[in-house]
Length: 235
Ligand SMILES: O=C(O)c1ccccc1N[C@@H]1O[C@H](COP(=O)(O)O)[C@@H](O)[C@H]1O
Picture 1 (cartoon, helix red, strand yellow):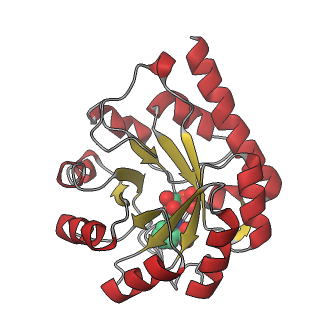
Picture 2 (cartoon, protein in one colour):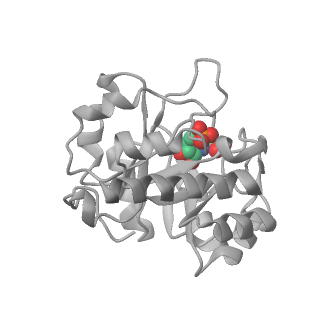
């Protein structure tokens, strides 16, 4: 994850296959399977309403399992500074994912205070929802574009909901971003082909039940991403 938000996107032929993040891992076997499948990053959720929520101790165990083999992303939602401090100390993530209503000031202050890169998630349902990208792109290290949650959702992400990718045509082509929201082994090749994101992120789409990762779906997801990028590179 060396590219900064705002750096120019390389021409397609020179671009590597999108990075792959598999989020919401809850046990060591799933961490091993995600990395064996080819995930570049694993996501650990610290948000109690989520079926993928981890205690700090459980998160630390999974992080140690992945360290040196994949990036370790700690996902929080409007977390208090004290919790973020504990996560930084105990879990030692390589990237913080902010999936709530964290302001640009909070993102910037936390990044400086903890000395960790930060990815800010922005929920998208209409073209207007892309407006906040401008306020975060030079503050956050990465931007994550996810579907806005359904009205009755108990969490702001991880709902398996997709959004209309054609809205992203309005974005500055120089912005590398991670795409999420309802991605699956079945639709991710279309997503890569149409959206051409810097990275893709999946949780529900590679599960057999909420919080239970499915080994064959994780492998199929990674294979679909790789196939789509090979096809693009050959064009
Ligand atoms: O995974 C969760 O439980 C979660 C909880 C709270 C905020 C975000 C969460 N996950 C993120 O949501 C998106 C989309 O997930 P899905 O593939 O549609 O299930 C992804 O970025 C996860 O990191």
